[in-house]
Amino acid sequence: MTTTEPQLWNPAGCPVAHIQDVIPGELPAGEHMAIIDRLREASPVYVGDAAGNQYYLLTRMADIRKSYQAGQLFTNAAVTPNDPNPPYRWIPEMLDGKIHTDWRQLLTPLWSPGAVEKIKPKLRQRFAEVLDAIAAKGSCEFVSDVALLFPNVIFMDLMGLPREDADQFQAWEVTILHSERDAPGAAEAQFAAMMEVVGYFSKLIEQRRADPQADMISYVLGAKIDGEPIPTQDVLDFCLLMFMAGLDTVASQLTYNFWHLATNPQDRERLLAEPQLWPSAIEEFLRFYSFVTPSRKLSHDTEVAGCPMKAGQMVMMPLVSANRDPLEFENADKVIIDREINRHLSFGAGPHRCLGSHLAREELLTAMTMWHERIPNYRIVPGTSVPEHGGQMGITSLHLEWDV
Ligand code: HEM
Image (cartoon, rainbow, N blue to C red; front, side, top):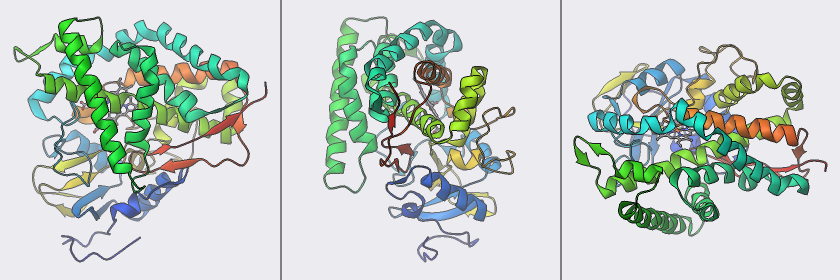
C-alpha cells in the first residue's frame, strides 16, 4: 500500500489508503474483503485519493452505523468516492431530506412483508424454471445460469415486462456493472449499454403512461408527490436505480452463499440435516459476505475517530468492514450458520436502509432451499478459478458440477 501523499489534507496524520489499493481489479474470491479486514485491523479511519478526489474511509461498525444514521451531515448527493459531483441522480438513493422521505413513503408498500408474501408462489415458480434448465445437465456457470437470471426474471415480473427481455437485461447488467474497469473499450461499452437501458425505460414509460398496467412503473406514474405528478425524468431515474439495486445485489449474495457452501461441505451437510437453520445461515452469509460499499458526501466539516474531515469530500463506509468488526461480533471472522444475535448492516442503516430487504431475503430463501432439495451435493469444477471484482464486490464466475 502506498503510504505517502503530500497533496492530501491530513492534519491528524491519518494513514493513507489510495482507492486503487482499497479496490484493486480482479482478485481471487474473498480477497477484496480480506484487504478491508486488514485495513480495519490497522486503523479506524484513513484518508485517500480517488481519481484526484480526496476521500475518507471508515472501518469500524460504531462509526459506520452512526454516520449512515446522520443523513444531514453524511448526504447522498454523491455515492462513489471518485465521482463527488455526479451528473446523474438515482432515485431514491441520491435524494436527501423531504423529497427522499416522500419517495420512500410512495415506494414502501411495493416491497412490504405483505406484498412479498403475495408473490411467494411466483418466486417458487420462477426458481423451479431456473432449476429445470440446469438440473439434468450436471453442471452450470452459476453466476449467469442462476444468480443473475433469477432476480432478473423476478424484476421482469414486477415491472410487467416480458420474460424474453430478461436475457437482454442480463447482458446490459454484465456490461455496465461487471466489465473490467481498465479493459480497452470498457468505458465506451458501459456508456453505450447504459444509453440502451435509458432508451428501453423511456419507451416503457411512454407506453405505460398511455396504457397503465398493474405493475410498478404504472404505480409510480399514477402517484403524486406534494400534489404533483412525478416528472418523467424522475420516473426514469427511479427505473435506473431499480435496475442496479434489485438485480445485481441478489445475484452477488446468492453467488457468495453458493461459493461458501461449495467450499465448506460441513456447513452444507448441517443445513441438509437441519433445514430449519436456513434463515439464520442466510443472515450469516449476508453479514460475512456483505459486498455493498456505499459512500456519502459531507455537507459540513466534521471529525470522525480523531480525523478532521472537510465539507464536500466523500466518505466511504464498506458494510463488510462494519459487519466483520470484532468489537461488535464474537468470532467476527468466522461463518457461524446458527449465530443467534446478528445485527449486521448488510441492508444499510439510517434513512436509506434498503427498501427491498424483505423481497431480497425471500428470494434468497427460495433459491437456497429449492436448490438444495433438488441438488444437495455439488462442487466447484476442478481446475476452474473463482475470480472476484472489487468496488461493489462480486464473484465473476463460479463453475459448479454435481452427479446426475
Ligand atoms: C441481497 C440483496 C440486497 C442487498 C444486500 C441490498 C443492500 C442495500 C443497501 C446496503 C442499501 C443502502 C445503500 C446506501 O445506504 O447508500 C440499499 C438500498 C436500496 N435497495 Fe437494496 N439490497 C438488496 C436487494 C434489493 C432489492 C431486491 C430491492 C428491490 C427490488 C432493493 C431496493 C433498494 C432500494 C430502492 C434502495 C434505496 C433506498 C433509499 O435510497 O432510500 N434492494 N440496498
